[in-house]
Length: 306
Image (cartoon, rainbow, N blue to C red; front, side, top):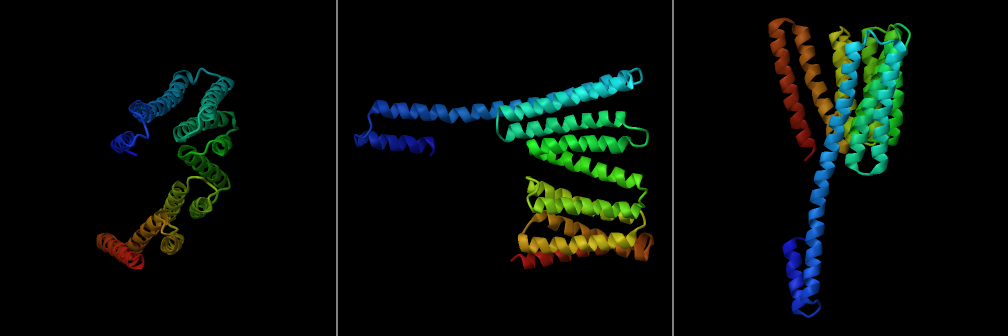
């Protein structure tokens, strides 16, 4: 109820003798005081959240700068100890903030600090790893920290960090196995597909973010295959993304799979035509074909969604 509407109602109640003038004034004063409090609290929450982000960035950056200046003179144990301490501080403050006050702002800030802490912990893990296993150990430690953090504090920042460390972990394992580039592209596609499926089934809390990450990763995987001369695989992946994405959009109306399907159609048609014809003329015709594919898919979608 607006202030003007409340004032009108109180005036009518006083006129009917149901309230005294003093009671009306008391209600109005209470309303005005309570109405002003959310604005003040909103500003405080916003400033508190912003201060937390800046403080976390400053803490992580200061640690990196200090380590950078004396990195060569610090022993291996010293480096690990500093990074572990920095990680413990960031993660601890994140958990503390989340426990002190529930709410979206506290959860976002806590998730960001935990993600920063996971990065520091990954650095400690990488420095403690044997040679040629640095990325594997770093990504494993970072994933473990951010997984536990996401289980406790679910936010967009911890979600992104979880995906990043998971991808690095799988990528490091595939790299150690000496999988060819085409196989790496297919693994990356499976990562995107699994992330999309988990978001669609609400395994991850932030469904829209998960769908965007999954769709984007699948398209990137197909392009990675194309750039590494696995063109048949790239075309198959792009076709699968397009067909499934359009189908999901028609049945569910979700825009991330639609964006992935449109991108896959545009890239697939353009690259196929351009590669087949070759040369500058082929590139131009490929671009034309990509534009036509985009227009046709848009028109078809608009027709189906009526």
